[in-house]
Image (tube, rainbow, N blue to C red; front, side):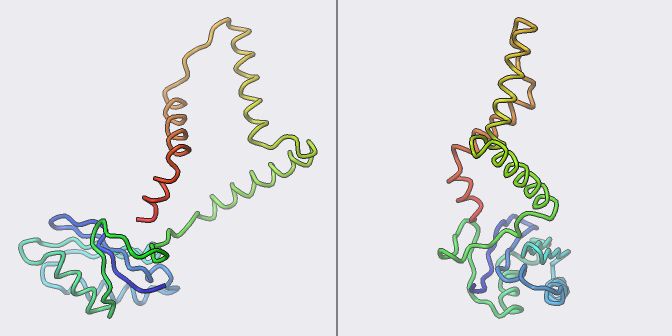
Length: 181
């Protein structure tokens, strides 16, 4: 991967940058050195570096220094001269990577994957966990309707979740495009 710096978000007094290679660093020496060096720029008040995400956040006095000067200092300090502004996209294949799911998310996903495999094996491949859960919810709803004689309105949090899930399902390409930014 080529090394580049992207100004992700800029407003007076605050600028966020992504350094394409920083999250690949196994030690934090480069991040610490970079934070110390940027903090010495006149007008820079605070520098926060999250090496895991490749993020650099600079709080500064806009009367003394601006985002272009901070970016120029980043270029000088890192030796990286390829930069992109907010909204500019790096060439294909050069997009910044997300650090990916955490350990808990991976363990939960593995748990459900294993359970799904067991359901598939038990039903000779006729049902998976998603289909079984759907049938369970439909049966529970039908039972509620048979017992109560009416269908209550779902709670707001269910509606919010279904709305979000529907959006994510039908707008998956747009979500991926934003993730590439």
